Image (cartoon, rainbow, N blue to C red):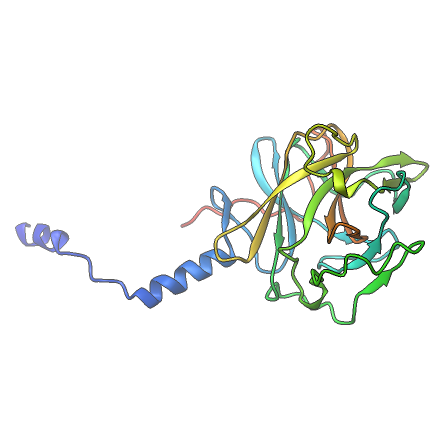
Length: 250
């Protein structure tokens, strides 16, 4: 009996620093975002939702308004006049996104860097509009890798519901982060690179009203990415499909 006690008091063997570093690297690839709920390897953009109070990770699909929907992160550059009057830039089919959030401040996680396990291939298509193009070629092109760019900014844009469509209008990029001149349908976000540099955490700066939205990437002061991630905010919507739920450790 006493011998067992002395065994328990023996100092723990030292852990190899290399193993500790490997473990930290592994955790940074799949960080925990809620108790027992970690980000996966395979999806590049996910939203943290709470359904009946339980955390769930919901994969978000990128769409460029055509029928091209992808789970990756593509760059489809659109040059916009930063001060032009608001006009239609992306139209998404259907009046409601397949993904509905049940909370008004959904946090979105975007895989960044080149190791997101998603191969896009091909070169990005640059869409030039009415001579506003070619400016803003600041080298902030995230299209080379398969993850997002840490140089981009992100906004949540409220969609205007039309007959069987959701319309996203252009906005004044120069007014982002300007708390005095809020743009009615644009919610600015805070972005935070998680430890290890594999994931970007995107949080709206204010709660979202009920409605339909898209997360939009602002590449530079004159360019946005036409590939957007759409979702709605409706607390009474049914549970989303293909969600990831907490996995209690055994």
